[in-house]
Image (tube, rainbow, N blue to C red; front, side, top):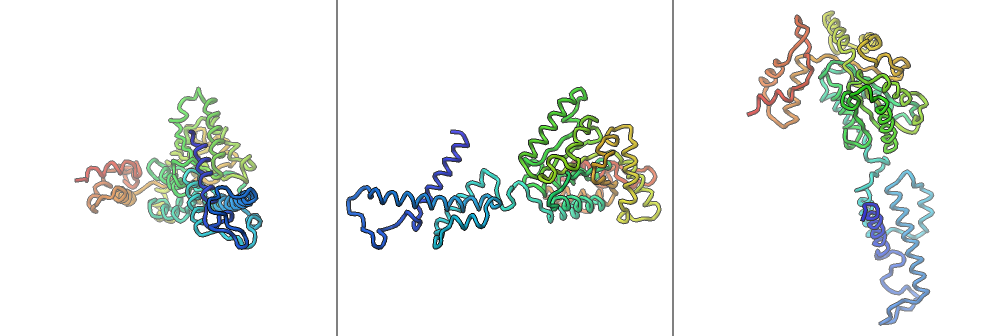
Length: 396
């Protein structure tokens, strides 16, 4: 028997259990006052009695169904509709409420349902804020902008466009890390959620000659994901390597007044190394001028970053309509990581594996990294990449 008929059969059996509850209409332990008790040895009640019981059973089944539906699909249940189902004086027996709870739990074991309407979506902003402030190191601009942009977008009642964020910086500075944090805190199953799709350019779209096929597949995957979920997340890693025609194909999904605007929430993340050099150069100059890292603002970096992206001849990203028509809402710079940040990454790597560490071990791991520029030796050339592999040298 296929899964669908088994579910339907199980639902029918549970509803029948509800009809057999003691104290429910149509299930009386003895004769009602004024009614004549059934004679001993009688096998079938009178035809009239059977009609009354069937009528009562039908009424209670409708009431239980209404209550079950209100628990599973609260948005579809209006107060006045529930009141219409329940005549004066009718109360759900305690055992009936227990059966109803069991039925609801059984249904939700194979079908997503909860107060929010979709248990796949968690939108844990407290957890996201904590992750960004505790687990992400050296990225005060990304921490503030991502939190403000994502929370503001999701809490907007009727957004008129998809939210598009473009992360820029050297490899290992935390772009993928933040993307994963978003998936983990916005969705119950994180990156494995039905509502999340990750595209890695050189893996999913490696051959330019197949760009027409890629465009069809990309449009289909976006459409199907949006049909499954009313809040979706699309992550494009190595975005600077996307074929220009794929970038153009994404344009209609990011426009104001797109077909899904106002009814669905869609977040696009573009992760790119593009602009990393200009970000590092600007940060270095500001530090040399006596400014602290935490005092660096978007005003210092945003104009330089956008100019670098648009002037790049190595990528079509800056020449696409996504950039030229301002369809990207925020260009978020990820700053180069310093020695102190690498030590924190090493500490987190030990803790994530539930391993003990010493300050000496953290120092040794941080010293293993290559630092640039050659004179200042200030920034880790790999950010925090490969830290997890390096702690293996310090295991017993």
